[in-house]
Amino acid sequence: MRCRVHRAASVLLIIAAVCPARADEAVKSPAFATVAELSSGFHSLYAQNFLEAREKFDSWESQHPDEPFGQVAIAASYLFEELYRQGVLSSDFFLNEKRFLHGIEGKPDPARMKSFQEALNHARKLAKERLAKNTRDPEALFALTLAAGMESNADMMLKKQHIESLKRLKEGNEYAKGLLAEQPDANDAYVALGSANYIIGSLSGGARFFLMFGGIHGDKKLGMQQLGKTIEGGRYLQPFAKILLALAARREKQGPLAQKLLRELSEEFPESPLYAAEYAKAMGRPIPAELRP
Image (cartoon, rainbow, N blue to C red; front, top):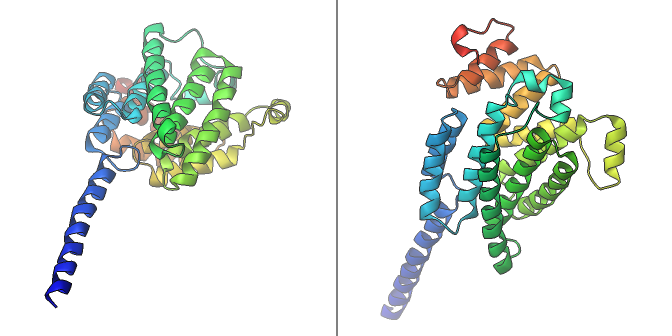
């Protein structure tokens, strides 16, 4: 009897030792568990407080130098800032067919793009080091998915390097499929899939037919549905998916959806003039003088 009690107590001690370790491991996973410092950084980013966001990401990354997601977040801060500065995150850009399909007028800021690329390269290096140890590492696949998606957006809209952009779209799709097979709840990854499907689906029929021979497909409806998945269950990229889906909805003349998403963004980030101005446009209202760029 006493032996059975000792054995039971030993089992309980082992469980007690193992469970906290697993819980702690999950908490440290930045891609698949909400990390307060990163969430705060992304909130600053979506509020267009770019330097503040970068300081928070740099601080977290310095404490977790082996995590590729830290460098992904830093890269996102540079890309989002440049997209904002160039007016890409606006209905003026999305509703202008020439600009939407061919990119910005002029060139992006070279210093900002250099910092963006350096962070991406570092993220990829860390991710591939993890894949060398485990080819199905979800953290690495997540970082590579977002890196490819961000670089594709930069190539398409900022650098106007459309062939390179399409290569990155295809690369991102492959990483995303591998990631979602391992981690089906990685809903932030649907931003990469959704934006790719929507942009390619917006091309002319002839262009889409040509791309099919390279294994590149696009579907606007599917792209919008995928952005919706990030909105429903994303951790860090939910607001970004809302921006993209709201602007896509305006292109597709889905006014109520665009109005709903932009109202939510303006309420979540009242300090940002961007969402309030876009909400006013979607509602057909005058833009207050203090919100004009």
